[in-house]
Image 1 (cartoon, rainbow, N blue to C red):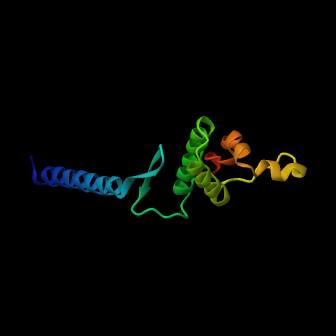
Image 2: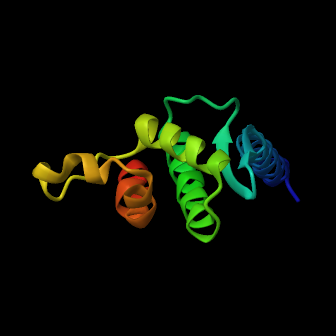
Image 3: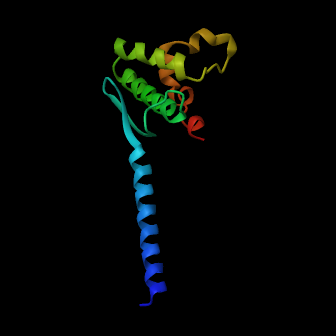
Length: 126
């Protein structure tokens, strides 16, 4: 091997090491977080600390609300109902198919029934 070939091989190896270190650093920053309430737990990845303004956090809250709605439909738990209404007012999409029936669709049973539409995660992740 000549001097130029040896230098080229060393530069290639050094470049590969730099790429691996940078890639690992990025992966390490993306930490796994868990939102838990009652029997529902949602896991999501987020870069460094959780920021409630980020859409990954909002989508995770919506997924938690859907899980709580499904739990509420099985057992009418008042603890779950308070959290569902809190998440609805904070992250839910107002769902009024008939504006004359607005009060009906603000009720917990309607929110639980239309949970997939009210807590739509797709809009946050687009």
